[in-house]
Image (cartoon, rainbow, N blue to C red; front, side, top):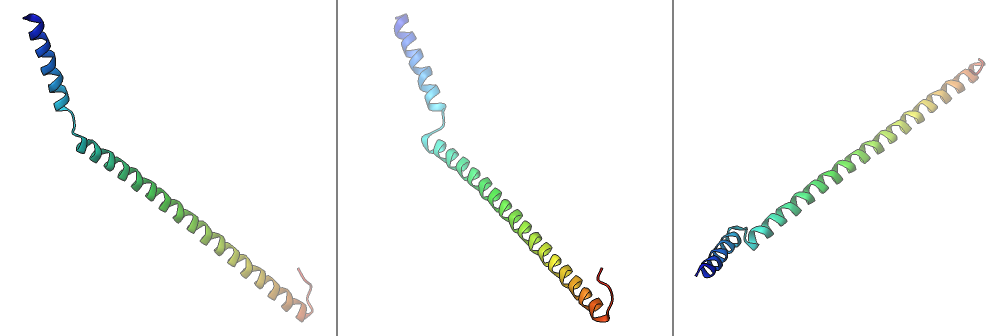
Length: 89
């Protein structure tokens, strides 16, 4: 009788542990939420990197434009000095 009672008690406790766990749908929902969260973070990271690259490209373009402007001014000044008969610096 004790063995039978022990077997029934173990079966009841095992059933209680199994029934208290999350259902398959809940586990799938958690996994989907985790995957969505990871995807959102990766997208935000990619967007951030794209903005940085865009800003660097704009800065490089601005620097090139300023350099071209400075070269143009230098050339104009040189031509003006040469036309006046002055020495080139």
